[in-house]
Image (cartoon, rainbow over all chains, first blue to last red; front, side, top):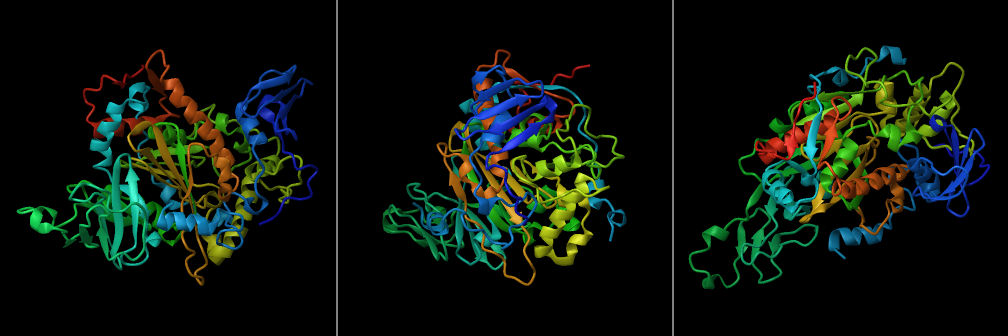
Length: 105
Length: 457
């Protein structure tokens, strides 16, 4: 499993070509959307408009960009098996889950 | 071996006539009315083959699981090395559930109300105060059974004693998995998320039946135009199951225009999107001169899968490394081929037609020289939980977050529908149409005043 290279920022940034827009996750949990023509808007991840000249943005890109961070140990790539083949650390606490599974709450 | 030496996966060459193109209209009532739910229980859930658990979840004789769908509950237990039985989870005395949850190495199923008990082979063991029930011993001598069957390590049940055997029901399905180098019996249940969803099970399932929604609901994963190993998606109908598969460039029935729009500007963009390397970090995977995104993705997955499969990875086509076909088995079971590892299942939750359970599995291969990893227990996420808590899904939970955001809104929107029906298209919605045709047949809706299968010239 290859790790991402050095981060310029821990916040996500995507370019959405179809709408000619760039989506940037903000420290406060909102998402800043910048159009190629210079218009900017800020949104909640559920699509609600907050401020700026740009008043509408693709809700699914807002969700994708603004979602909570992925636990690093669980950031394996689609199609891959984690290196240790079994469950990596950080997955649901096994003891608790197994107890629930076999013995009920 | 180069890709040009590897034939396109033979099972993907098996074509069945695409579903007859037509536009259909489906009434919205089936998505929220209790009467429909009750009829589904009688006509579908009491009659259909349905995946209940994995073999490796009950590895020893006497191990058992509790499988629940709608208001129905079944005990599924191993009674021999290769023998499974399923019982209606209800005491024959006063009806208490015999088992509240899964268990290990049981020698009996004893009711916690008055103590009646049955052996794991279903025969009566202890009829407490039997003297007080004259003339009833014969009718409680055996627990009522559901039929069982196993395919690919999945233990299926069918409550209908007159049902056809599982193998007949599945038809040629095994040829498309075992026959194509994807024996799900040789996959380990690596992840199991059980997600409670505030929407009818059909709404949730339909959100995954067709791939058309990807272009709008998942704009971040739309592929690059240079992704030449596939040419969109094709869809085939195999009777009790159907398949969405990567299309060959020669396919006549391929994705129509507008099916997907690339959001990648370069092959490197496409690779970065595939694995979610965003623009504030440097992707560790670089596309070399002359390489396509599809080649790079397949190459990297082949490197990763080599840890589990060894040199066997070289025998797989890029298509199976980088993507996979989704199979949908009536009524609710969805194993994927290839190395996507996904399996879905959708079930109604108790007697609430506006609530359901979505199971997501990742089924991974493991090296031949190592023991089978233990199956992951379900990670249950309630209605108040966020799927973002299921980090073990890797990047998938963010994709499901987009899908699940839609389905709750569909449930709400259907109930305020002015027209009272939804419209299904002739091509892109064909899998959903096929599902509803099956649904009406099973529901006996030949008088369907709610299903308007009108053909549009």
